[in-house]
Amino acid sequence: MSRQYIIRRLLITIPSLLGISIVLFAILALAPGDPFEELATNPAVPPEVRAALRAKFGLDDPVWTRYLHWLGAMIQGDWGFSFASRMDVDTLILQRLPTTLIVIGSSQVIAILVALPVGVLAATRPYSLFDQIANTLAFVGFSLPTFFTGLLFILVFSIQLDWLPFVYRADIAGSGWPWLWAHIKQSIMPVMVLGLFQGASLVRFVRSSVLDVIKLDYVTTARSKGIGERKVITKHVVRNALIPVVTLVALQMPIVFGGAIVTEQIFRVPGIGSLLISAMLANDTPVVMAVTFVIACLVVIFNLIADILYGWLDPRISFR
Amino acid sequence: MLFAAVAFGPILWPVAINEIDFAAKLQGPSWKHPLGTDDLGQDLLARLLYGGRISLAVGLAAMVVAVVVGVLVGAVAGMSSGRVDAVLMWLTDLFLALPLLPLLLLLVYLFRDTFKGMFGVEGGAFILIVAVIGGLRWMQVARLVRAQFLSLREKEFVEAARALGASKVRLVAQHILPNALGPVIVAGTIDVAAAIIAESTLSFLGLGFPSDIPTWGSVLRDAKDYLDIAPHWALFPGAAIFLAVIAINFIGDGLRDALDPRRVL
Image (cartoon, rainbow over all chains, first blue to last red; front, side, top):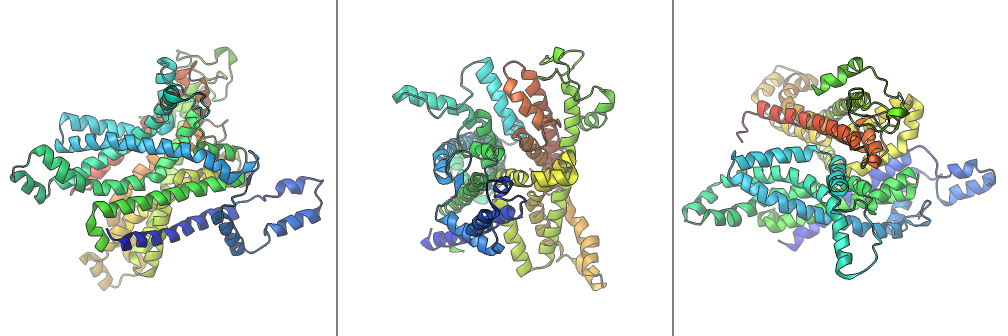
């Protein structure tokens, strides 16, 4: 993989980030409502003060000047002040972000750990009993919305069996192994809900992509050279079949973040998803905008990582 | 089955959705209330039937919006090669990279009150949700239509029609579009399921329909705080969503197999 390829990819990312910021700003600019509405109804604030404030924040400028101002502030990390939590938006987000990333990351790992072996096994024996069971389960898995699986999990594992806590707590006291165990125990359900949902749709793609590869001539060649079936599958088939799967994982990142918002809400995980919802219910616009922008950026970054991985998995791409 | 139940159910099960009966609150399934009651003693079957109408209507309407926008964008991009095509496809890719749910939430959050003022509480929420869900789901259809157009417009029968002097609009509407519709129908079917999930998610998070209008998502939202004492309350709406979505997905899958004879596997 050449360095040129990576640089080119990085350069392509910039216009899409700009595009996203334009879309977000357009939504904000089109939306009705004035950030100074509260001041307007407050009789203690004279109209001159209001006009001065408007001028200071540039609300009377043409749209594109406001966009450039906003963009500049966003890039410099000046994201505004949360009215509801009484703290700067960027510290608030930095507090919440690691939790979300841990939950999403581990759920992706689970999804891949489940989907890869199941998909490959199903594809090596198409239309067998195992394949049919796996297919049906995958179908059921991605037809179940995450908020319903979440509630089902709570019902079964917390209420009926009383194995796992259903409220996620960030401030567990103690240290060492019991502390770690308590953290793992409370993350199991959110991670599993997200991971199984992802895994279900991945299984189908892994299966069809392995099926595409397994019929190719070079696989037959490998077999006729007398290489064992297990080795043919792991060394020859899976690596090539993985290439489209990597793209798919990246393309599904937006959906994963959507699912994360829902699961965080159900299990009360203190991540950026639940921050988004509570900020919306509290009419806390700076937080809402910043969180949406952060999520959009994360999606773009994950797409970038996938593209680079893609180039590493498939050297043919770099030279195009 | 489900569609029929939702369409005709309110006639057969004439219990009012907001009939409050505190004596019968949080009851499990019984003969009087086949699916039990909620914390205000409202009959769940009636609420679910009513909510199903909204959910399915939202799903279908949002699909129509998505397909119309997608076909328009795809057709324009597919017919006009060059710069227009490149810009439209860049736009499509940009929308594909946007995180859907946060954007949905953001749009609903920002425009809720305006629409409420314009079309009334229920109508405003319905129009807004349909427009937003449909407006954020057209990308797949657009890509499919463009790909179909690119290959179809070079085919001989299109060439023949063009030689006969057919105008561009007639060419698209009469000759190319009908041949490109197969995959669009499949994508549209799956979009209905996705839109139902999206609507339930919005309602579940408290940003969809106002909570006095029972949709499957909002019933589930109300139920989640009573999981330990009234599990039936959460199970039935969840099962309804699940059944609707899996049924639609199966239809989509079957249609794909039926419409695409080239796919063997």
